[in-house]
Length: 193
Image 1 (cartoon, rainbow, N blue to C red):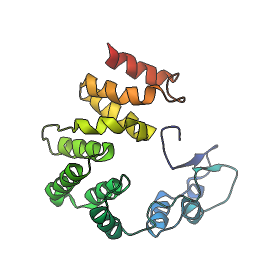
Image 2 (cartoon, rainbow, N blue to C red):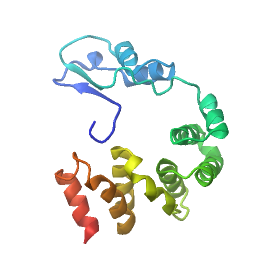
Image 3 (cartoon, rainbow, N blue to C red):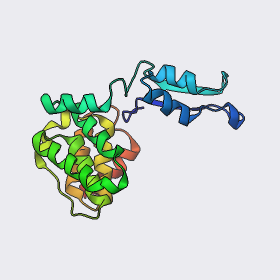
C-alpha cells in the first residue's frame, strides 16, 4: 500500500482454499464497473475473520469504457489519459505488439509523461529493441506516484543504468515513507556509488 497499490487482499490465517477470495471474480467484477468493495464482496465465497481486504473500497478502475477514455485523451490530453493508452496497449493481442508500441510512442511524443515513458521502455525491452527514454519526464517527478517511481528505479537498476535509477530514487528520497526504508537505502547505496 505504501508503494501506491489501490487494493490488496489476503488472509491473516490460512482458511481452506475454497474460502479464499477468487481473483478471477474480483477482476470480472472490476471489469463490469464495480468498485473494489463491491468486487471484493462479489469475489468472496465466505465471510470470516481470516480474509482481509485493504484499500479504497470506492476505487473503480474500469468505471468508463477504454474506448471513451482514449477518445477523451485524443481530444484533451491529460496526465491520467496516459494510463488509458497504456491499458489499451496492454490489452492488444501479442501479434499486435508493434501497433501497441507505435501507440505508446505516439502518445509519448504528443504528451510526454513518466508513465508513458516507462511503459514505452518496457515494451521496447520486450521486443528486444534499444531503450529510448525521454528526459523531459524527469521534470514531473514531484507529481509521480511513489509506486511508479520505485518501479522505474528498479527497472533501470536491473538494466545496469545507474544514473536514471538514481534520478528516480531521488524523486522518492524526500518523501516521508521512503528515506528511512531499509530496502530503499540498499538500492540507493547500489546506484549512488
